[in-house]
Image 1 (tube, rainbow, N blue to C red):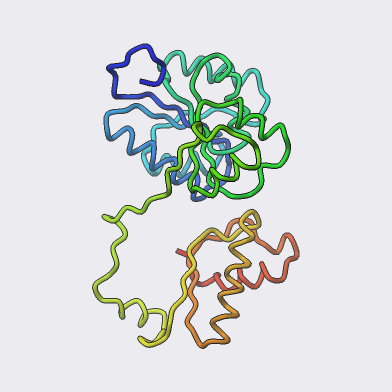
Image 2 (image 1 turned 30 degrees about the vertical axis):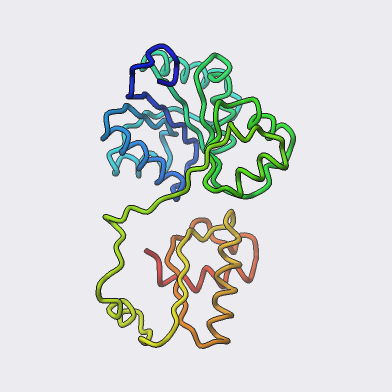
Length: 258
């Protein structure tokens, strides 16, 4: 399908690379993708660091994984190990989410293995070298939203035909609005007539916009007598940056983690 050798094949062998040592939404989403692919006739693997949270959490989820040191974005020995794995398991496609993982897989792409790069954030790409790897260092870019595709095309001249927009989804079998909507309000002490503003996300320095969003919501709630609720997980404490707003947002979440 992807390598052009057997056009009648509808299954695909996919290798995901995840060098992150911490666990978050991106890593969880990757494991869910891999598990779905393996449950629907494909073969998918995750390669991650052996001493990472990704390894332990992915193991709990039953994700098919292989551990390998992924310390540097330029590591010929690591690239060789990945290439051998791809050869042994007839990998049709590589998938990466981060810049570091993209660079780790670049030698494999040069050797002819298709590489798909996911882009899930709207932050500026930055240097020309990073834009270069998007333009010339992958087979396809999967963007989470149309605005991301527009940025890549307008700001960096990337061919729009190379970018596929696939938005994030919600599993409606797992997330269904409750029939009794007053039950949750009673649990958190909010009246039926009080407008309730919700925020769900990971609160950590890298996602500072969420801290700012939380604080705007808190101010709005105080002014308009609305209820405010945040559900999330705290990564590295925002107080490392000595940011009072982030600290306030973090503290407000301390009793609401899910």
